[in-house]
Amino acid sequence: MGTTKLTRKEIRSGDPVRENIIRLAGILQSNRSKIGGAVIAIIVLALGFWACSRYLDSRAQAASAMLGRGMAFFSANTSLDAEDDPFAKGDKPLFQSDEDKYQAAAKEFSAAADSFAAGEAARTARYYLGLTQLKLGNNDEARKSLESVAFGSGRRTIGFLAKKALADYYADSGNAGAAEDLLRGMIKDAKCDIPKEEISMQLAGILTGEGKKVEAINVLREARDSSPIFGVFNQLLQAEIEKLQKDVPADSETDAEPIK
Image (cartoon, rainbow, N blue to C red; front, side, top):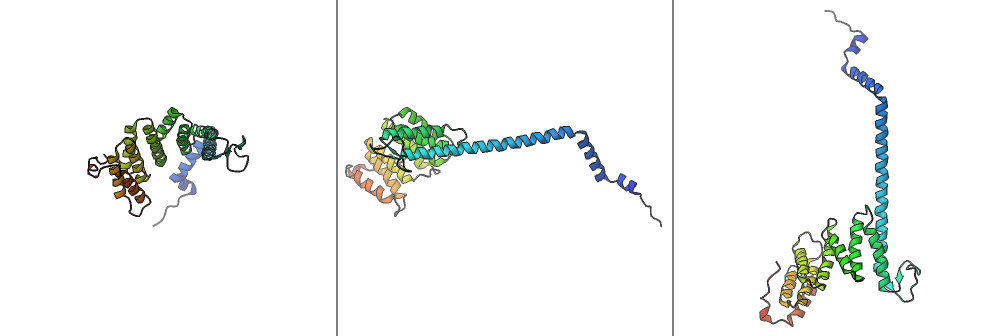
């Protein structure tokens, strides 16, 4: 039985892969101007994205530097002999007065907080700006700064620290109820990463200031009972309880309600 031999031309004419390659080459040839423009557009977009990323990174780094400088000013020492330049005598800043150092710190914190694309550095800066504004007596501005951090999005720790500062501000401003609500909410919040014993002592202090010593004792007892017996806070909580118990009749300590 004989076999039929195919010529090279006949083999090529029946090859679908070759046909597709030829068709693609034809498309590229006829549309090379459009394809070239598309390639250029992709390159321009890539370069733009890279430049934008570099710009945002530089802005974030600048905000972090301002935040660090503000924190150095916030915790700086004071001396009547200090010069106008806070770093005149070395790496550690020195100011003539608390007013001067807080004004300098506020300037840095404000710039970092308002910096575009600063991210978490801006939020941290706004928290410290709120603390600095409290030191300067700018209470309304401080409240707004702290509330924007306490009830905004971002890293939880800074938000909870802002709530603690707000609680003290509310209590000092005569709004103890708002302060209690903030602190009780933090105590119940499983996501709160600030020691609950610390929050409980702050809450007990506010309750004591309102004359609610029995309730304060109950708050401290609950915190003590849930705290490790050899933990850092256990002895502090017990000492606070004993101090308050001296002014409270023993038979009245069961009258207060537990934390709600």
